[in-house]
Image (cartoon, rainbow, N blue to C red):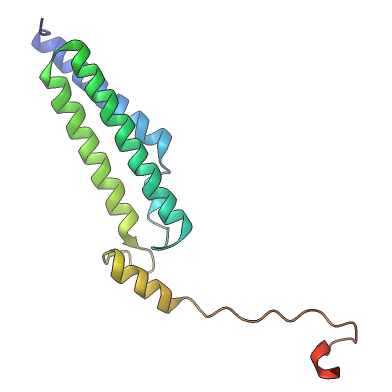
Length: 136
């Protein structure tokens, strides 16, 4: 029993809105995603949440389309999943200082070269302003 064309369109749009809601709940805003440096912990966490949102949204689309037995819902919801996944991947691959997509390997290499080497921490000295090593 397939839906009427009007009902199929409404159900497809509702499923696409459901997919958008899943992505809104599972991933940070796109503007925040664009500011993460490749290779950093937030960059990795965005990838994980994007993957999780894709799985949940795809499962929801498949479930709704199987319950209604209407292929239009699957097509509309599936296109929304693909569009939001590509949009999130693109935002996550932008290298913030250049605002360009460099590719993961090149961006990680440029980010590693741009980050300064860690400096040694000098403990405060009980001898005033001089480091404790001066008295050793």
